[in-house]
Image (cartoon, rainbow over all chains, first blue to last red; front, side, top):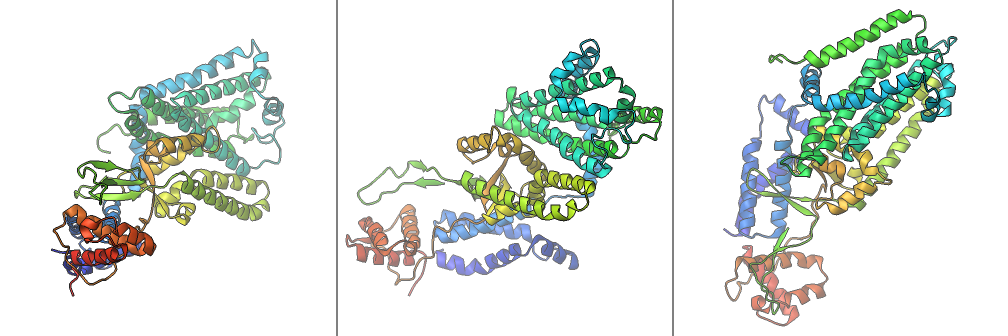
Length: 327
Length: 248
């Protein structure tokens, strides 16, 4: 069959296919719903088009025709293989079972991150009272200066450097700052895990030094009543973002039987649920830190109780949620 | 794209030798047994698209910050959240729900695709945009550029981890349609490869200067049967018309 005949036989069908592709996805969906069925047998038409493209290539038809057909095939390929559900069900399943399952699956990296973060934190916190000078090595001067305003006895709202700071303003700042740190910790794991380790250790040392300094300065009651509520979400989220970063780095260092590229792709896909969960946890932490933690009219004992309850809640969630097969 | 050399005039080359050219076109095999062509975008158009996005985001942020500043401290909190969202979620939202491209990419005719040619997925888009910070290191997308120059698919580090590529939406039109001429059968049977060469040259001829088209047509006297460039081109077009099946 020569090209002219081929084109005159099928040009009509190609035009139909092109028109169908041009209509936006929304219009196609609406059309299918209003008629109660898909009026256009897309998979069959796509296979037919692929066959025509293969024939045209095999018979060495003109490049013009082949380009047109392969353009149509690319469009069809995207519609056919790009279709996937984006339902809310997935989000709910992720929250109920997916996230804690991923955390349990990655338990090695989780414990490593916890050790690397909480280890320095605990050591430094305990060491500061006997070596108070070390706090000045780690902490910038303005952080030390502001400690008194943030956690002093006369503060109306705890954790604020300036009296004018509002809840919403601080909420914005916590999201901007903390979620960024979470994302950076994950991303820097790509540098063979060094970046993630650095952020974990650095934050552990920094938070430890600040806590030690506060305790040493006699502001412990205000400080702990401020941090109790959001500490579980914030500190565990930092560890989990480190977990995700360490996973990326480990895939590059020890790819196993895969190429490094393939190992990285696999690790990134497996780590991304952690990062999504981390972002969610840090949003919650920012909400608590901005709207609940600064309140001074709540008795510290209640804040401690709620803080401990949050730790238990998250512990139970990560250990037990999504273990049953029904979900 | 794989090119095979065929006997062209006196420059006869081994026709069986596969010839891999440096090309930005990638062939993606599909389950239907065909190959799709993706035309990948290099660092320069992607940098331009990024710059356009940066300007757009800066403009949006500046425009929204005027009313927000009036709200005082509350407004500054909202501004920080806005800045955060524009920095981290703007690319992903655009790529996943608005046709695979940020406005800057759209302006340059680019889009993000999975390496298998399907639309970019949410997880892949998150990966490539979260890892953007590492591509930015040590400054001004240094690692990203290095990675793109080394990688055969112009992938930056985020693209490698996410298995995505940035491609042009439209394939460049390298060929026009074959100009009509009185069809003429070739003087001797042509192999498929020779037929393909004749058709490609005939289709390209309207895009070339007439002198260049004649010069090229004159290189294949074995097909056109003449050394004369003017008549060679006419003959070539006639043979091409015959080959695609036009008849008087």
